[in-house]
Length: 303
Length: 205
Image 1 (cartoon, chains in turn brown, purple):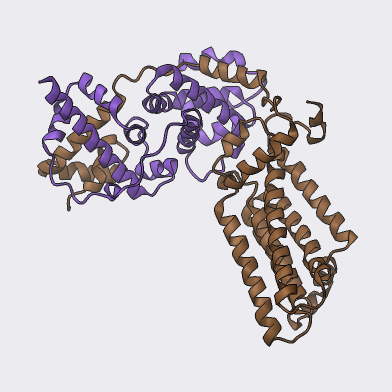
Image 2 (cartoon, each protein chain N blue to C red):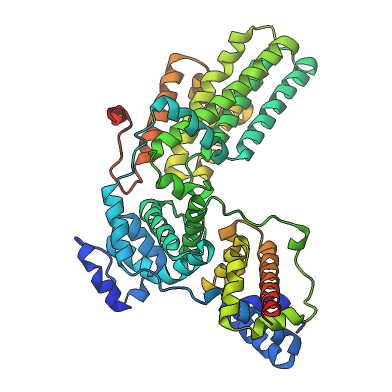
């Protein structure tokens, strides 16, 4: 055995698996150098546990339960909603995670680039609305998918034990991410109208992606809250693929499925209503996991 | 230890987990029951981890009362956010992550040590220097004083490794750094501790 330098600290701490522990022990019998290392780690271990007082007994549990019962998520009483909102939004920017912001912008930029390239080399048909109607929704759905995931939220327990209800936090994040994506798509649209030779007009172009973006984001939100980010991403991709393949020979047999998806893939009253219903469902579901009676969002204005 | 469980049975109401022979119940089951609002499971979860968590918090807070407060914050967060645990790590590791965040929340000054060139894992040790020998031979009072003088980031990693007895992989999860960084931080912490003990001895000579 070469010197197991890497294992000596864990050996001294007693956290090695039995087999590794036995191997290191056997090595130590013949190796003074490693034995001295272990002695050093043991000294550090003694130092760590020296003069540590006894932990509080079960009275701490009672105190915690009392605190939980007496202060059912203390509310931000001192601050008005208007002053709290910007603070909440700013805090969420950091918690949503840098990767979401960067990836969204990159994909959207790629979509715009593709449009410009396609307009110059492609079929010449209204190409920009088609591309943006595909790119913008999937960017939003991807960003929304992970918004309500304890596993991906670095501050989850802090959120759970602080005054703001989880639904409010989710709503704040949703506003941020979807708002950001809408701004990105708007910028892309303006750029395409100004420089990309898009002739259909800005409103027509925005109409092509706004409805689908809201719909797919709402869909992703519901799946994300209920089943987690992976299912949400996958579900959004399935819908997206159905839309993408509609009309191609590949999905000729699936017309019954792809048809309605395509029909909804625009900005119209039905799409808006469906998107709103999905977002509402997502927010309602988000409160259900709480071990405490949920503060109803609508009744919050009483405080 | 069993007496402790009995003293908290007053908080129980209605059916819950049977904790008879409670070591047979896994931490995961206890946390699930806790998330469902079972105070007995919560008390048992606390009993199992009180000593480790408290030692860890005492080491980074450096003060008994503050450590107790953070431990309360931690358990309150566990009671309220038990549903947030999704099984990507052991419950124990998760608990230390919660405790650490609560500690950082309260002790805003607590910053992790900057990653420097010295954080690169050390090559095979070149044998203990005179300082290391001083550490091995030092008496507890001297070691305790040196411990208190150690930077917070070093105390933190030492406490996780030797008091809480987490594996290096688990510590990496708690601190959210690569395993290599855990190992080098531990080496640096021990070296610094040995240095402090040695200078202390020199001064008192």
